[in-house]
Structure formats: C-alpha cells, structure tokens
Image 1 (tube, rainbow, N blue to C red):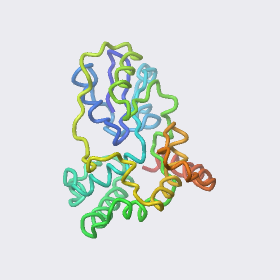
Image 2 (spheres, helix red, strand yellow; image 1 turned 180 degrees about the vertical axis):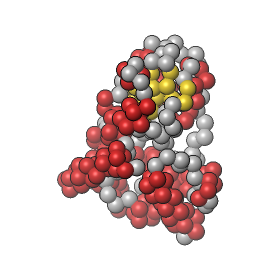
Image 3 (tube, rainbow, N blue to C red; image 1 turned 45 degrees about the horizontal axis):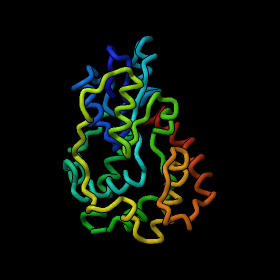
Image 4 (cartoon, rainbow, N blue to C red; image 1 turned 135 degrees about the vertical axis):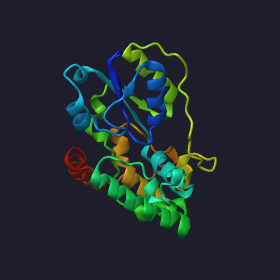
Length: 245
C-alpha cells in the first residue's frame, strides 16, 4: 500500500494485478510513499492507521481476471519464481500469521505437484480448485474511486491519474510478466472437465466483477449451486480477512 499526502490518495495493493509496478511508479513519479505494509487491507489496516484527513483520501486499486491469475500462478510455481516455492524461507509474507502459514503450506504442495510430479495445468487445476473463487476485492473494491483492470492497464492507470487530478508523466512501466507458453490463458483450460470446473469456480466472481468467459464456452452454464456456495463461502472469507488473517 502506498499513499500520497500531496495528491490525497491511497493505492491498495491486490496481489497479482500489477500492483508492484503501479506502487513503484506512484512512488517514483507522483510523490507517494509506503504506508502500512504491501498487501494491507483498506477497511482494517488502512483505516486504523490513517488519520482523520487521510481517511478522506481517494482510493484506487487493481483487479484481474481470476482465470489469468490462476494460470499465472501455475507458471510461477513451475519456474519457482524468486525461489519462494522450493524454499519456504524465500516467502515474503510478513504480516498475518494464519495467512502466512496457509500460503507456505499451499506453495509447498503446489511445488511438489507441479515440479516433482509433473502435473499439467489442467491436472493441477482440477486437483486444487474445487470451490468458488474470491479474493479480498469482495470487501471494498466496489466503493473505491477507481479500479485499474490488468486487462486495460495503461488506459486505466491514465484514467486513475485523471480522477486524482494528477498529470501523467509517462506510460506505466511494466515488467516481470509470467511466461505462459505464448498462448492466451484461456487455452490452458484444455479439457472439457477443466472448462466445466472453471465455470463453477470462477463464474460467480466473474459475473460480480464484469468478466466474461470465452464465447466458445457458452454451451457450458455456471451451475446455480456455484452461486450459493460463493455467497456462503464469502461470509466466512470476510470474517477471515477482516478479523483472523
């Protein structure tokens, strides 16, 4: 999370949405500074640490298609990105006891399945994604002043600066992209079972945040039970993110 007292805004880092690149640019070019910690939550961490004036600042954050995030995660594990999957000491999570240990367990499990057992993306996805997806964007993103979508990164970053009343100095530098074997992320869901599972896992979240599946998948419907499970799980997720993590 970074904040600018001069321009009266705060940027909330949502993982895997180019948030590191955006934060770095806001610090380097627009006078922002680090505040709280990298993946601090707005409603709890920020509002507790902010003073009365800072609580009035405009808020921006990022968002990304969850299918793209899942494919990117697979290839990060396969390449052992920054050594964090083969070496638990390389994990950079410093805040949130439960969150840290859940991620350490999950990273180790995924590393064993992908790099030791050699599971394909579809095999790994089917083994590890069985309930409807959500991120902590469900907490507050809908009331933020601007959400920068990964799919329209440059345009949305420029629009965010316009909303903040800040003149843009240059295009947003973006690096560290995950290699995905040179094809669209949707093509990694290469079996009918994987596509049906994707509809169940991602459908409710994608509908809530305005994402669409490929037209070629239209013959597969998102089952009604996915929406019921999504709403029920999100009650527990909100409790975890707000009070337990």
